[in-house]
Image (cartoon, rainbow, N blue to C red):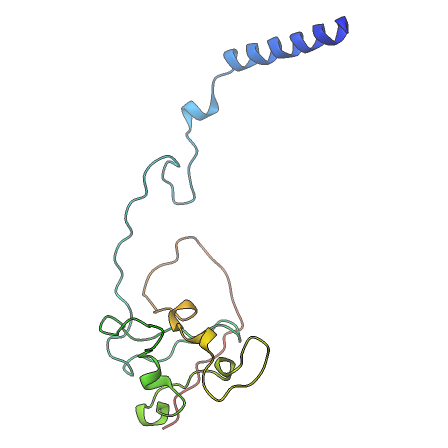
Length: 160
């Protein structure tokens, strides 16, 4: 018991002496994040980026980098109403009954399958809020260097 106490005390004293005598690495070089800011510093607000495309139908479709990637929205959405339980303005152009008249891509077949895999005649309620998967395309440089090369899947042209 006496040996254990002596050994523990010696270890604690050695650790304290090392901590007091060793200059702190953090004092000379504070930890930096990937973006280069001090970790404890407040985040700066992001620059506002303009979305590509103004009116629907004026911007070419963006190629996907893998086959199951949701397509991005290639037009501005500032004047669109918010998606609610009863209204979805996206379906005014992309719905299966109007997309040909509007010359717009139709919503995917996957939107007509419920959670249990059963085919539906109308779009599934689980796919009602489009912007959960589909995002607007913005012209911005990548935040970090990235050499990702996906299987580029060309965007399907809209049939006229």
